[in-house]
Amino acid sequence: MVRGANWVGDAVMSVPALRELRRVLPGARLTLATRPWAVGVFDGTDFLDDLLVVEDSGAGGAWRQARAWRERRFDLAVLFPNAFGPALVAALARVPARVGYATAGRSFLLTHPLPVPPWRGQRHEVFYYLNVVDELARRLGLDGRSEARPRGQRHGHTDDRARVEAHEGPRAELHVSDERRRAALELLRGHGLSVGRPVVALCPGSTNSRAKRWPAERFAALADLLAEEAGAQVLLVGSGEEAEVSAEVARAARSRPLDLTGRTKLAESAALLSVCDLLVTNDTGPAHLADAVGCPVVVVFGPTDPVTTRPFSERAVVVRRPPDCAPCMLRDCPIDHRCMTAVSPRDVFAEAARVLAGRAAAAEVAR
Image (cartoon, rainbow, N blue to C red):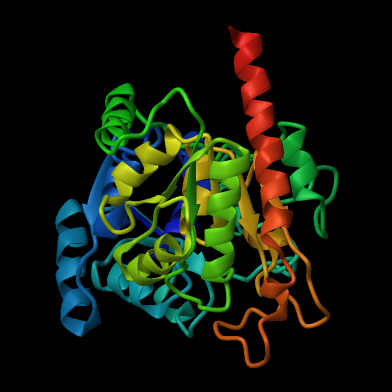
């Protein structure tokens, strides 16, 4: 049993660890316990055998989850979240081996409590999840690749992006079937978009931090630049909680972007992003999801740290104008939001146009 992460971005960043767990335990039956929204994303993946939906919370929910786990008689629980609750469920379910970080006062519930690595905050979060599997393999005497550590050294910082660009890094991609891609294309056609012209998605929201939001009026200005100067068709995406900010962008934009915010499930959003030419977004879950399904991403960073939470591939472009106070990691800016207002629509458009031009050139060569 693997208890999956609770946020979209974290769930995608755990994919390399799930792949590594499959490699380390090739004969095991791997079940991922995950939130309902993630089922469509992980369903049909080649590194999992089964999915178990986690819907309940609180004391009663913990007992119900524990009963479900106990019925399946798991031998091992690998816990990616740092919270107390997943460790409690694993202990109540009497899973014989329980592995996770010694955080949130839960060490006594784990059979294999792991210390938080000293390099956390200096390396990408992908390696934080991979380290769990690496430590599990080491403690069980199995063949771990130590992907969580820099090559040639046991501790310290490494340039994770350089490793990714050299194709040495872990694999974070997610497969989208041809059927789901066709359905996404039909959705776009049904709303009047042509697949013969570039399609750019914008995600102006963020569900867990207002400070991470580039101003809505700047997203609107970017939508107009994309439509008027790059000939792109623009759509707005995000969860239902982000509908208000997307509506604000749509009202302010002359180009009238198609607003699909909150109108697709996460699996449909993944397929939709897989057929888009580009996503421009804040540092939020869709950035990681788009990157995982092969869509180029331009991410506006402000209060958060791209070293740890940027999308994990060479396709991702970070736009950032950090003041002295960044990264602060705050959810609300106590001053003037200068980390985000320092980034202009022209700044982001320049990167977006470069990506679109590169895709057009590649398509021409392919023809």
